[in-house]
Image (cartoon, rainbow, N blue to C red; front, side, top):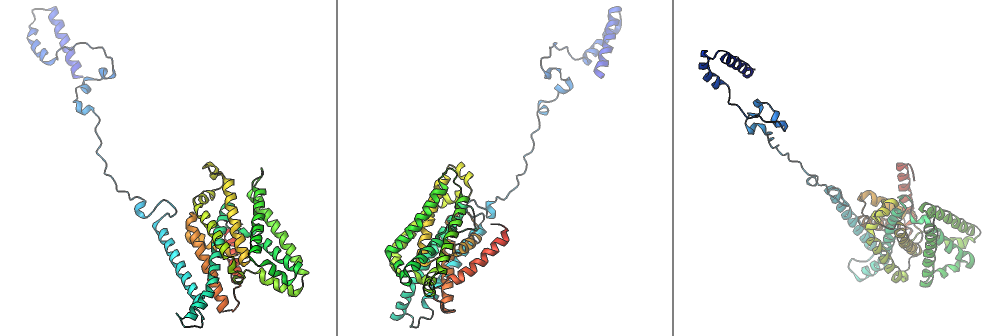
Length: 416
């Protein structure tokens, strides 16, 4: 505004000079020159900066630049790793320590029960020749316990993974019903002396081969077809097992009471049924199957995610399932033919292993389940032998405890 007013005054003075040249207003021209800034060349505005007022353009260049923000003070954020979180089968250091403690406690219990079976009520002085001779005779039962624990642990955990159900066990496929039919048929047609026909390496191999062939035919028929489905296979297994059980019951009803008494001793899971003659065949077969399942641990982790996820990750779900089920059938055939049926042992140790490990990694679940199986078997054997004097019929305690655990799990989950 002041600049415009000054320019208007100067215009009036110049008009007066042009009208009256003799006027003394020329003396004021220096004053005007001192007020008016020198003329600037006319510039056609080409950009936005050209039409900005002088009051803005005359500011220092440093002021026109945006001010740089002061750097913020970096806050120290504690990473999750510093709090003990990790990626992998264990989500925290606490969980890793817990798993180590579980393994340590189970190993200690296994050692205690082992010395209890070998040394309790030995009757001979410790360290003497007689003591070790008696202990060596009892060691055969411990070998059987290790074999059964390995078979039940690896077979049950793997079977529950591929079927995506932690309630059912491999027994649902009719292994125990087929074993019962074989034993009952022999006694029914050949009498009490027919029990001897089922003993021997050749008979043992035939019985195992029949069970594996039955399972393989069932898997190949119900899983490899166009409409192959895991649930249909399980239902068919239940129906076949029920049919075989009814057939066995019918033959037992019309059987002579003395023959039935002989048969009953063979139908209960008993460690005394095992014969060391079978060890050269059973031990290598069980170890090979367990090692193969152990090597398939990462693949079992993927199979546990379901069929769709497994296929999206590039794995042939059907082929891997068939391989795992074949190994499971071999393990179940071995343990059933060796000691007889044990329905709830696999379910009991698998359920306890899941709760104790709390991880998805099968290579961590297998050792815990195996140790649990050995502790349960050896503890039940010790109690029955030295408390109730019932020999090696460990099924009595295992079925009772396993049945209670099964009911508790069902009531907590509210579904199958």
